[in-house]
Amino acid sequence: MIIKPRTRGFICLTSHPEGTAQNIKNQIEYVKSKGKIANGPKKVLVIGASTGFGIASRISAAFGSDAATIGVFFEKPAAEGKPGTAGWYNTAAFEQEAHAAGLYAKSINGDAFSDEIKQQTIDLIKKDLGQVDLVVYSLASPRRTHPKTGVAYASVLKPIGETFTNKTVDFHTGVVSDISINPIENDEDITNTIAVMGGEDWKFWIEDLKAAGVLADGVKTVAYSYIGPKLTFPIYRNGTIGQAKNDLEATVPVLNNLLADINGVSYVSVNKALVTQSSSAIPVVPLYISLLFKVMKQKGIHEGTIEQMQRLFAERLYTNEPILLDAEGRIRVDDLEMREDVQEEVAKLWEQVTTENIEEISDIEGYRNDFFNLFGFNFDAIDYDAETNEVVQVSSIS
Ligand code: NAI
Ligand code: NA
Image (cartoon, rainbow, N blue to C red; front, side, top):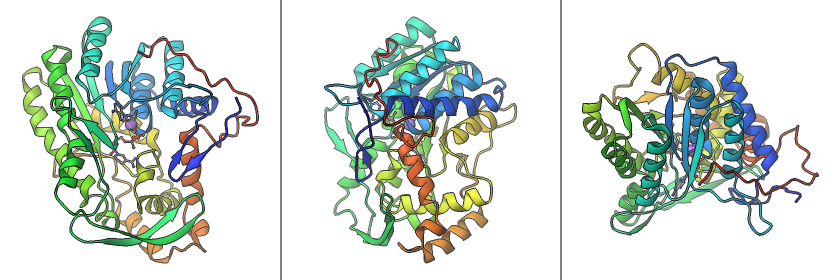
C-alpha cells in the first residue's frame, strides 16, 4: 500500500515501515559512531522498548555494548489494510539489524502491567539468557489495569489547586493561543495518575524478576522521569503527572532495599524534554520544546532520544567512577536543558512568541519534523509515493 501521514490532533494514525526502519538505522549509526561503552550491560530487559526513550535505550545497549536484549511493549502489526504501529515497525527494524550483527534480540508484545506478561518475560529470560544485568523501565501509558485487583485506572494531565492558563501551540498549524486547564476536582485524579505512571508497576516487575532468580548479581535498573522549567510546573511537575513522578522516584530506595542482597541498584534518570508520542499529548509542553530546541541548537547542545540514552549509558550508568547524582539521588541527563543560560533564553522567547513570529523565533519546524519522523515520515531517502509492503512479519516477537 501507499502510506501517507494521517493525523488527528497530536496522534498520527499511520506509520511507514521503511521510514521507521530508516529512523532506527540512523539511531544505530549514531550509537556506533560513539564507540563501545566500556563495561556496558550484557543482558538487558527493556520494558516499554518500542518507541521514544525505550527503543533508544535498547539500541544503546545492543549497539553500544553488544548486549542481548529482550523488549516488552504494546504495539499492533498491520491488519485489514491498516499499517502497523510505529513501535511495531521500529522493533521489526531493530531486530533485523540486531540479528544481522549477531546479537540476540527477542520481544514480547502485550500488556506489561499484567502478571501474564511478566511471567512470559521471566520464562523467556530463563530459557534464553538465564539472568539479566540491566532492567530499563520506560513505560508511558494513559491507562493501567491493576494486576491484583482488576481495577482499571486512567491517568489525567491536570493542575492541582488552581486553573492554569498559559500559551500553547497547535504544532501542525503554528497557531499560538491561550489555553486554560481546570484543576482536579478531587484527589482521585491524583491517585489514578499515580496508579498508572507511578512506581508500583516498576516495583512489581523487580519483585517478580528477583523472586524468579533472573536478576544477576550487581543488577541495575533505571526508570525515567522529568522535571522541566517553572513555566510548565503547573501542568507537569506540580500537576497530577508530577505526583506520579514523585511516586516513581520514591520507589528507588524501596528497590535498593529489595536488591541489596544481590548487590543491585536502582536509579531514576531525569531526561530532557523531547518529541515522543507521549510528550506531544501534554498541553503547553510542545511550545516549550519548540523554543528549547531553537536555543539548544543555536548553542550546539541539542540532543534527541538516542543522544540522551547513549550518554546516559556511557557517561552515567557505566563509568568506572561513582555515578553522578543530584541532591535527591537522581541521575540528570536533563543537565543541558536546565542550564541557566538556556532557561533564561527560553523564558525570554516564551514572553515574545506569537502565531506571527513562531516560525522564526522557535524551532517548531524541528518539532514537526521530529513528530513525523516518529512515524517514519519526512525522511529524504524514502519515496512516499511508492508502494510499500505494510505486512512485516517478525518471528522473534511473541
Ligand atoms: P513513548 O510513548 O514513546 O513510549 C512508551 C512505551 O511504553 C512504548 O514502547 C509502548 O509500547 C509502551 N507501553 C505503553 N503501554 C504499555 C503496556 N500496557 N504494556 C506494554 N508496553 C506499553 O514514551 P516516552 O516519551 O519514551 O516515555 C518513556 C518514559 O520517559 C516515561 O516514563 C516518560 O515519562 C519519560 N520521560 C519522557 C520525556 C519526554 O519528553 N518524552 C522526558 C523525560 C522523561
Ligand atoms: Na519508551
